[in-house]
Length: 461
Image 1 (cartoon, rainbow, N blue to C red):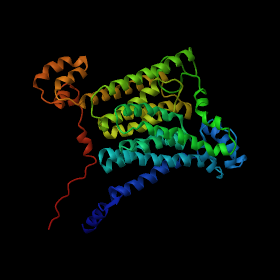
Image 2 (cartoon, helix red, strand yellow):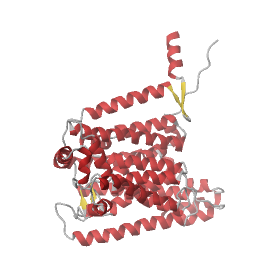
Image 3 (cartoon, rainbow, N blue to C red):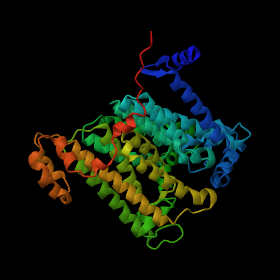
Image 4 (cartoon, helix red, strand yellow):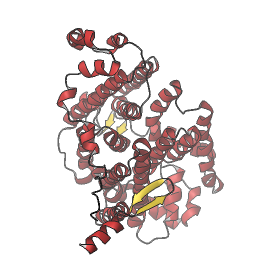
């Protein structure tokens, strides 16, 4: 009995790391998580994907033949200079496959710490933050992308996650510095920009002058390659060249172009449909911005992270030329989303399922289901996120009278409103009464109990 009590004392010993208080059991769990998550990845390291054989291995061979960093003066790939610097850094290793995978796996952990920081910042719950970190490190698509596929999507997305962290810390400067880091690696960073535009319109955190960090830092990152001999114009315009690289409506991403059969295998009116899709994207994002801007609402954490997820998902669903891996950012934001709104865990699981379905044809030449059906599933998930955003907007409208909220409730709920409006005296009661489905769902408090510490029993004298 005494040994058990000593063990309890040890496991519950508190350690402060900066402003966060961990218990020893938390740190032990995290250590085990890090080791085992790495072992999962290590077992996948020997796998050579088509991307590695078709592109990455050839690039690494050229880099080694040209002398490592000296190769920066030669155009070897259509990747940004930032990733080429990393490739040059590991070009001294004999096993190029393992070296490249180590880079991506390192950023898996960088992203996991970002998830912890965001969730802890928004909830104040250490164990929720650890759970979010665990979900990212064990997320199938994250493991597949870095350790199986030998891809680097985790690099730019980890910087976006840190940008979101500083956004919630109300630090516009560092938000855009990390967005700039992300942009130096991947053009796909632009998927998150509509969210920040809306936040600027709502006067939350974002300062317009800080946008200048993006072009300035991008320019600075091109200088080493320029000094080694690459034309500066080519370096600065590399993303314009990339944007014209894939002409098809979709490259195995389940979006609207899959529904109209504008795919690699069969396209009918590629240029016309893609052009229309660009305007459709602008219209939809403009509508979302208009709707949010004109609402007098409290921008809660739940609402903003839902908005971030929704805008990224809508952008990817309507923009043409989307690659199968471009939805990677959606899955990472969805992890934060389900940590803040546990009732939406099925949505997050659904989004991850979609990502796995669309990666299988490329990884193992097996199609789980036709891309059209996956696109329909994705559309249903986006609709669910959009409806959740709508409910959050209604719940967080700043008003003195519940009658003003009636304009924001769908016409299908008019009968419910008439039945209850007379007995409502406060806004929260009105929203609860007009949403009959709310009572059927389990409460967030049930999920919170998983992370709450049990009450200590009195020590017998």
